[in-house]
Amino acid sequence: MAILDIDYHAGNGTQDIFYERADVLTISIHADPDYEYPHYIGFANETGTGPGLGHHKNFPLPKGTDDTRYLSTLDEALEMIRGFAPDYLVLSAGMDIFDADPLGQFHVTRAGIRHIGIKIASLELPTAVIMEGGYANAELGENVVTLLENFK
Ligand SMILES: [Zn+2]
Image (cartoon, rainbow, N blue to C red; front, top):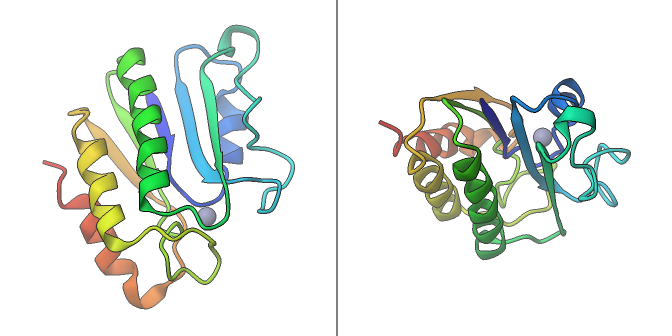
């Protein structure tokens, strides 16, 4: 199994649970904890421990991360997942990466969210999508539909 966390905030709980396991690849793309909650975890040098070493990856990103930056980072994450060749994927889908999110400081547009969905779906893995954050309430439903519409 692989878990990909695209919520704006670092996936601290997921990281903690699977940090010592080699059978689960966990990847989180998120706001750098240098400026964003949770400030104590989610740094690039945290890569697992013991048998889990190399099976966790954090991609901390700067304020103002736009579609281009986000999607190129996602490409790196998806390469890791392809290399790990899991039987299935769990996607922690936080929509607080959205440009207009009141808590987030990324500038990922709806077109960016569409491409995120297309890229993740292109893994062609059985995928469980778990809804996480997202606080731009008026746009949340549309964003989630946009993310999901390219999964079969
Ligand atoms: Zn969040």
